[in-house]
Structures are given as structure tokens and as C-alpha cells.
Image (cartoon, rainbow, N blue to C red; front, top):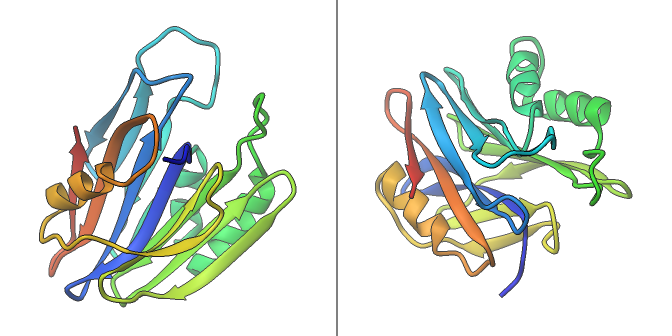
Length: 195
């Protein structure tokens, strides 16, 4: 199995856009996901002065869902009020760049829209990219902070956000802590966390 750290994916299942966030962690496994209205936050439960282990992870808007591994979540959501998803990712990830921790952890970000398109972005110490992707049914495009830059995979079928979160938890990566799943519904977004 591979250690990917923070992993996020975007895709399409039975015509519904989806995104997930899988938190894998060696250093800070004591964390939880807390849902507050249209947002989800990762909260660290151990004492530390590390500023990167608690952050907003999901922000749900009318037309978009934003998922990232850091404080860029809220900045991207704000930028979507006046610019395209691609430009929002480029501008915010370029401005914040990678995290200044011991591992130079990349910032990753994903956006899904209600219209079948998705966007992924990656800001590492030595690499930067933003991709516009045509979502494919039954597939997920994923990126991660470590050992998995970009990949497309067959994703197990699901019908609800709860099933999506469980399926993401079943991915073959090491040190899994929790997942967050978001599925586009006819009205709004379905949202679930696991465990």
C-alpha cells in the first residue's frame, strides 16, 4: 500500500458529480471532520503548534463544491464569486504556494460543478499545475500530497454521499483517518463524513 497523505478526487457517478477527501496521516492521526452549515472543517485533537493540521476542507456553494487540504478552501470559494474555477485555482494556489512545514507539503484543491466539469490543482515546491477535466461516469481523477501526483481510477459505485465516503475510506492507501464525501443532487449537495 502507498502513503498518499491528503488525497482528493473528483468524478461522476450515475450522472452525478462527486468529490471526496481522504485524510491519511502518520503524524496527526487524532483528527475529526466537523460539519457546520455549508462547510466541513478538519479539527486536530492533539496538542501542537502546527498551523496546518486544522483547516476548512469543504465549502459548498450553489453551483460548486470546493475541496482542499488547507485554508485555501475558503479563498477559492470566495474567488469563485467573480472568476472561473480554473482562474480561482490558479490565483489562490499560486498566491499561497506549498505549505512551509517540515515536508514542504503541497497544497491540493478540487472543484466540481453542477454541469459535469471538474478542476484539480496542485501547488508543490517543485511543481504547479491546474487541470480542467471532463468528468467520466464511474471514474475519479485524483491527486494527493505524496506519492500520487495525478491519476484516473475506476471508482466503486455508490448512490449516496455516505456510500461515497465509505468507498473512499476503502481505497488502498496507508494510515487512513477519515473521509468526506460530496455528491451533487437535483437540489444542492449531499454531504457525509466517515467514520
